[in-house]
Length: 144
Figure (cartoon, rainbow, N blue to C red):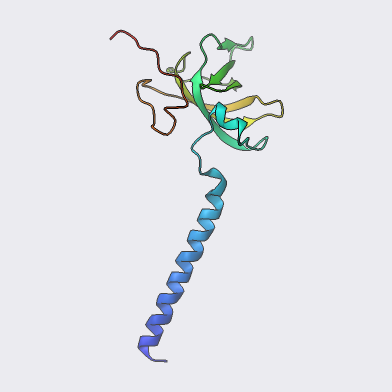
């Protein structure tokens, strides 16, 4: 085989390998394309029970309850159109509070509640990603 044909075959093999790797990566990420679900998203596309997902929204005012065990809390994540009860066991971030943004990592239960393994508190309620700004209630304005 001529060197020119060997280079061509090597180039084609490299393209096939890169294409195959890309296809495998895309198929693995197909179900994880969304950064998180909002409560209103769950009415149209509910994730399977027990699958690890992220739930994002605002912590409903007056919903944080500390349980008697001292390390568990329950609260409600809301947006304009939906509410999801959440249970978390562990140490909540310092910035976690009512009427602020939160992303909870965990799993949905069969009863529609969410069990969180990790909480991510949003540090500045004035910023809202454009993709979800229309789904979230307007942040409270505070005197500066």
